[in-house]
Length: 197
Image (cartoon, rainbow, N blue to C red; front, side, top):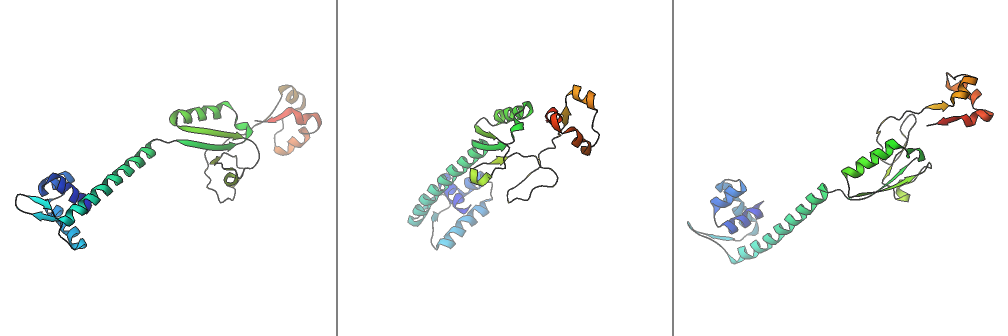
């Protein structure tokens, strides 16, 4: 802050004007300059009631400070821009059954919100090593407790699963009421009649 005060003071030529622009008191502005001079062990400004001028040491210090502050402002502006504009490639892995209208709609909404993001989507049912294969995100259904992993996990939403059968088959053979009853249905040709969706 003291460097910024000195630069503004030199550029405006007045303690009062610098203090007003920096939203400081004139006394605080003066203290910043005194602090710099004390730390550097040299006078930076020649002061009179009507005039301010830099000493030789002050000129050198001002020029270096101005360059550093200009660079800092450029870096801060670049960081602010990068924080506002989200861009890059997001590599996602998900099960094959994610290829459905609901997921497609969610992806479309994401792309609409972040048009500078390129989605690289891999649909497969195998367990993927995210680090080894370079994935940023894995979407998976977890049954029961969360898996133990060194990766960060977050529950997004519950996904209901239904076991369905053809209406002809169910009329002919009845409706199972418990998971154990499914064993009698999932034999022979019956196995091909049921699908998990």
